[in-house]
Amino acid sequence: MMRTLRPVAATALLLLLAVFLLPMLLLGSTEKEEAPEESGPLPAATLPIQKPTAQSGAGGDGATLIRVAMPDGTVTSLTMAEYLWRVVAAEMPASFEEEALRAQAVTARTYTLYQMSIGQNPNHPDADMCTDISCCQAYISPEDAAANWGEQAELWGEKIARAVSDTDGQAILYEGQPIDAVFFSSAAGRTLDSVEVWGGSVPYLASVESPEGEEVPNYHTTVTVPVEEFKTVFLTQHPDADLSGAPETWFQNVVPTSTGGVDTVEVGGVTVKGTALRTMFDLRSASFSVTADDTAVTFSVTGYGHGVGMSQYGANAMAKAGSTWQEILTHYYTGVTIGPWSQG
Ligand SMILES: [Zn+2]
Image 1: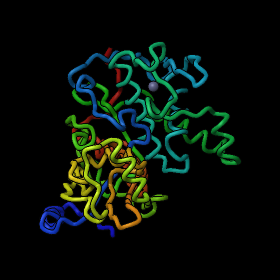
Image 2: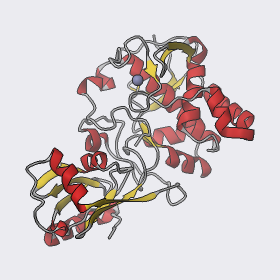
Image 3: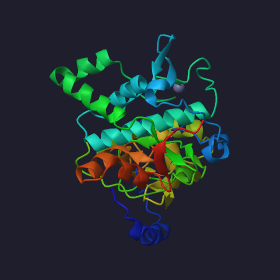
């Protein structure tokens, strides 16, 4: 069975769980579709406030060149404006609200500036960014985007170009420097604090409310893992776990995240992170509940992504409700300012 934890009810529920050792978890929340650090902790050395080393290309997007490592191994040089068009087109549905697309453009620009500020990426030492979402950000060529968009191609291509040009040179800043502007697809009511997902506290990546809901495609998903398969996968990584008893007894002592997701849970006596189970069983987020019976372990999942930073569907919901792109960004990133990135 699945339960949805509300923050207000979290404490009471936690007590209930502790008392009854319910073999299930609850959940809560939420990934930047392209978080490179999706499955690992944020290295402390990347904390931007400790490394104010970014240098600007004065003159806005047109004057900043980005070297992009392409899938075929070549490196293509694009202006920031050209690069951002390709990223935004790949990262967010072009049908989204204009203000959401502007917020996405600024987030992608800021993320790029941040990546460039922290030094060479060992995955592609000859390029600033790549097209692999597990490393940098998503990317699509104008030709491929047009093919996907069909008869909307011209309209949507121009819409994305406007989102980039309307925010030319604008970045999300914390203490004057571009932030690690991670983002993800959809949250289960709130975003997560970075410390809950990656173990490193970042002041501007705190947990905040996120307004998207049932209108998100595949907002609720279910993953059913046969008992024997669960045992095989889990024991490979945690050979000390005792999964000899009834599956109903495997899951104990759920500790929820601040948003009601699974922070940690004991599985066969071994404490694991909810994010680890997410990776192990390819769940769309760590906002899940889990039940087990004699035949299968079932995860009921809400939202999509790692849950830290800006929610794309949340941004679209805010835009529909009248928020500007600046309001969206200052909502999702705590204590930041928006401004031209021009100190060099
Ligand atoms: Zn990369």
